[in-house]
Amino acid sequence: MTEPDDLKNVGETPDAEGPAAANKRDPGRELFDWAESLVPALVFVVLLFVFAVRLIGVEGNSMLPTLQDRNYLIVSKLFYDPAPGDIVVLTKEGFLVNADGREDSFVKRIIAVAGQTVDIDFDTGTVYVDGVKQDDSFTKTPTTRRGDITFPRVVPEGCIFVLGDNRNGSTDSRYSYVGMLDERCIVGRVLLRVLPIAKFGAVT
Image (cartoon, rainbow, N blue to C red; front, side, top):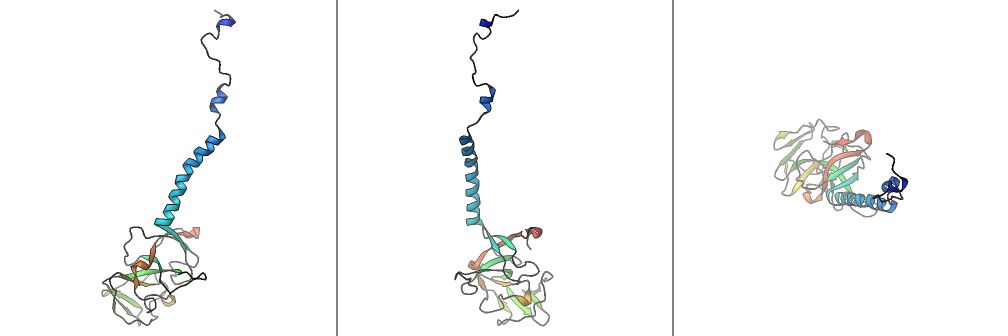
């Protein structure tokens, strides 16, 4: 049966705006919601790079063939204990000073830590730690270049002994003006190479 026109809307509340109004959002509110989600993420990234990780560029060729000039690395010192074989970024007062007069960083590989004895046979280019011949297959050349430090040498407490992978093109713990580096000189361990993109990944 057909209802009279005057009875069709009895008990109904007219919706003047219709379904389109329900789907319409305030642009200002939408922007606020977006910013509210973004700000914590930005704060996290800032805190991460201030306290946990740093982005550092390589300058020079002392770590060839493992690292090249202008590689960019992610490094961190968070919960880090130095260990032989680690590649680390370091600073040392008076060793490298940039154009702004600030201490510059440099990259080396830890060969030995506190209490270990380092010996180098420069005739054969062989490195020994606690009498054990080290695997130097990752180096550019055998270690035949001498510094002004005599060997064998025991690494003091709280210090590390470092070499560059480009053994005959690196200034490192073989020289007294670098020497055994205090662990406090460590900026962080190298975790990742991020540039160039073609070489992105962990560094060992």
